Length: 253
Image (cartoon, rainbow, N blue to C red):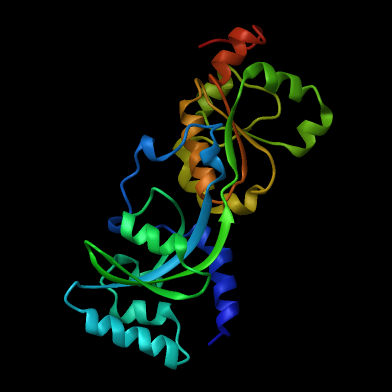
């Protein structure tokens, strides 16, 4: 078995590619939970959390498990796999990177106030939890960029060399109208490029996402943000706005 710190570092490095299966602890996604691009909410702190869950009437079991974590050389993930009733048990209780507004209030309060690596207890409507915050980070930003500003930046050769330009429209749309430098990442082919996006692109570089009217690109940008991309720009109004406001040589469709 790896030393405890190495296991934590490995989990922190790989968790962005895991599907979150512990959905019933999280509040369903709703637009009210995600600040609009450009607001201060885009600098929220995110934490990497693992936990185990037992039934409300199993407080004694929880206490015994907590004692084992203190007295024995054992990891919370090992106990979660064996004892947790949360679907995340198959991933050792790993919930992944989470931000405020994604979890039920009692769990969120305990998790966001917990010191790194310390085992803490929380009570929710689902039962009793032991949770551990393994790491923390700031979630970066996701902002809207107007077509005029994008056009200005694209005149700079250094910008074209360093920025990552993604077009998430379908290939048949791109054949009708496109902007030089934008690479196709069709949402219909997400299953092909999504799982390896962290290898294909650099999460720390400025990443610009475009679609037809700016809706699909915003959805894609929000997903990229959840995968650790920290500098995201959604092209407001999409290529349609670019054509009508900046360059009428780009076909409108």
